[in-house]
Amino acid sequence: MTKTVVLTSPVGRVVYIPPELDGHAVPYKGKRYWVIAVDDAHPFDWVSSDIASHAIYDKSMGYVIATVKPMDHCRMWVQMATQCDSGFLVEDLRDAVQTAGQVAAQMLAKGWG
Image (cartoon, one colour):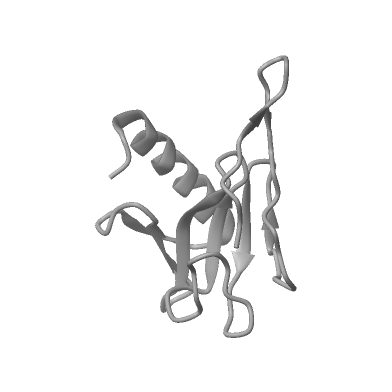
């Protein structure tokens, strides 16, 4: 279980907090976002293997912003964590992270949900 923690240094920069992992594979580690593999033996936060194969974790917010599920023809379905109808197709994990970050920023600007 991860903690939702955002810390700010005296100069106003956000301190990124990595997720608490327990044997999870991490196929993508960016400065802000990490992609965490999920399987039967390693669920992450609220994401289990029946929901998705990967979770996109936002280190500045301290929680999962989206899930990633493989589809056919080498594509992946990315589902934003806050809205049922906020999903999109991508071809790789880097695109999943980039697009999920952009969508999350738009949602945050408008208000989640």
